[in-house]
Amino acid sequence: MLFNSFESARDTTNWYWTGTHSFSSDVPPGGGGQALEVSGGNIFPIGTFITQPLRYGGYFTLQCWGKIRGNGGYVELATISDHEVSDAIQAEIIEPQWQFVRASDTLYCPPNKSLMLTLQAGMVRDGQILVDLIEIKKIASAGNPPPERRRLSKK
Image (cartoon, rainbow, N blue to C red; front, side, top):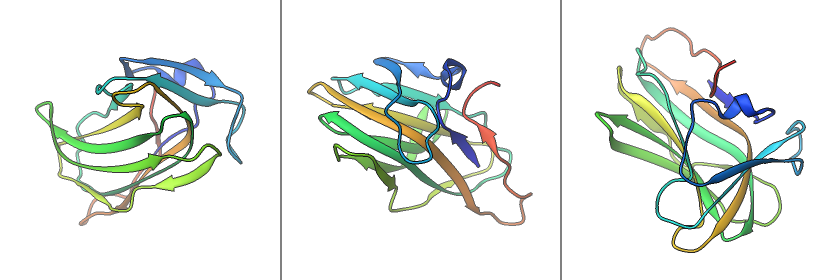
């Protein structure tokens, strides 16, 4: 399982940023001391985190807490190979108060492919979202070792 609660700047280490991000003391239930706030207004993702290729494939779910300030956004989980997205699932963030959201589908990641987590706010108009407690869970695999818990950043 991959997990991030954005409690310090190191929780955004190894992310790629095209928009602005900051930490907010406005947090969801059980969210600790800080949440991540991202802002943008273009078609490019605001923040992206890419895992190393996964030795074992499997089926993954995506869930988090989120809220909007202005226009909505989403959190997306995709499989990538050779810098190409092959499949993706999304959890939309559209409410002005904290809501627990999850992708309605599962995502299959083949062995030796990477997962890419994307945060997006706005699109063609400026938008802001707050997000916290992102969880990516491996829910099924075919004879693979049990899933492990890893953070989405360096420790």
